[in-house]
Amino acid sequence: MGYMLYCAYRFSQDHKEQLKVADLAPGWTILGRKKDIHDIEWREWTKRMRTSFPLFYLGQVVLGAATGRLMPKAKFPLYGLYGVVSLAVCLGWRPAGVVLLQAAVTFALSRLRRPALVWGFTIIVMTTIFIEPGYSWHYNLVPSYAKYLIYMVTLTLSCLRGVSFAMEFCREMEPNPAGYSLLDLLAYNFYWPLLTSGPIICYNSFKEQRSSQDNDQSGLQNLPMVLWGLTRLLFWFLCVEVFLHYFYIHAVCDRIGVLKKASVFTLYGLIYAHVQFFHVKYVVFYGLGSTLARLDGISAPPQPRCVATVYQFADMWRSFDPGLYKWLVRYIYWPLGGSRSGLPRQIAASIATFVFVYYWHGASQNLFVWAALQFFGVLLETLARRFMRLPVVKEMEMKYLSAESSRRLRTLLNTGPFVALMISNLVFLTSPQVGAHYATMLGRPLVALQTATVLFCMAQWTVEIRKQVPLT
Image (tube, rainbow, N blue to C red; front, side):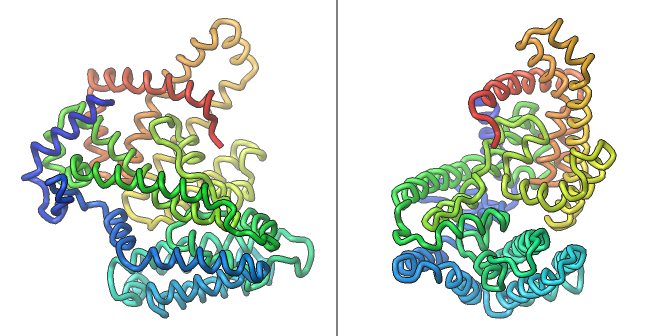
C-alpha cells in the first residue's frame, strides 16, 4: 500500500502542470504547495467552518446547557425552534420555510396513517430537486451555490427523517401515542448537530434516547468525551488538508487523458487514496454532529468504518453509513419482505432499496451505474451465502477444509466481486468513464492476475480484523 500511494504521489507531482487550473489553488504557506480543491463537498464544508457556522453549534451547546439545568423538559422543543431559526439565518427564510413546510406536510399525512401517501409526497419532493422546473426553483431560493449545497443536503435528509417519523407513528397501535406531536417532529427534524450534514438517526432511536434525557439536570456530564472526540476530528481534518497538498487524486481523475498515462500501480494508489479520502471526509462530516449530540445524551450512528477493512458489498453498506443502512432496512427492505420471506421477495426488496438509493442521491448517470453494480454485487453475495449454507456444501467444507483453507477459498472466490466493489465505488466518486478505464486496464490477463493476488492478500487480513472488531 505504501508503494501504491508513492506511485500516486509521484504521478500527481509529475503531471500537475497538465491538470485544470481551477482544480489547484494556493495551499498552506508553511507547506509551499498547491492544493487540490476539486472535491466540492470538502471545499465548501471547510469554507463553512471558517465563517459563522461554528457559532450555530456553539449556540446549540449554550442553549442545551441552560435549558438542561433550568427547564429540561423544554430543551428539545426549544432545539426545534433553534434549528428553524438557525437554518433561516444561515440560508434565508425561503429555503428554511421549504424544509419546514416539507416537515409539516409529512406530519399532516402521517395523521392519516397511510404510508403510501407519505412515500408519495416524499418521492415528489425528491423529484423536484433534480428535474426541471423544480431544480431551477430550488436553486433560485438561495443566494449562492455553497448555500444551495447545504440546502439540498438538509432537504434530502429531512425527507428521510419525515418518513422515519411517519412510519413509526403508523406502527403505533394507540390513536394518539405520546412523542408524536408536531413539536416532537420539529425537535427531531431540526436538531442542529445532525440537521445539515447527518448522519441520519431513525426516529424510534431518537425518541427513546430523548425520553431518557428529559429529566437530565446536568447536561454536560459527557463534556470530557466530547472534547476528546473533537480533538480526534481536528486531527483527521488536518490529515485530509495535508493529503490534498500532496495527492491531486481528484484533479487527476477529472482529466481522463492524464489518467490514461498512469501505470497499474499508480491506478491502485489512486483508487485506494480515493476511497480512503472519502472515508475520512465523512468521518469528519458525520463526526462533528455525532460528537456534539453526545452532550444531549444522543448516541448517533457510529462513524464510517475504514474502507480498507471491507471486501464485500453487504459489509460496505453496513459499515460505511450505518445510519442510512438502518433506515433503508427498517423502512424499505423489511416492509417489502427482506430475507425472511423467501428469495424472490428478498430480491424484489433489494431492487426497491437500491432504486431508492439511486433516486435519493440524485438520479444521475454515474449513480445509476453505481447503484446497479452495488445491487448485483449484493445479489451475488446473497446467492453465494445461500449456496455455502446448503447442508451438503457445509458438510464437505467441514470435512475437507481447515478453518484457514476455508477462509482462503472464500476470499479467493470473492476476488472478482472485490474488484467490482472497488470500481463501482470509483464510479460513484468520479465518473463512469473513469470506472470504464479502470475496468479495461485491470481486465488485462497479467494485470488481472496481479490484481487478484493483491486483493486476495488484503482480504485475508480483513477477515482476521473482523474477528477482532466485528461489524456493528
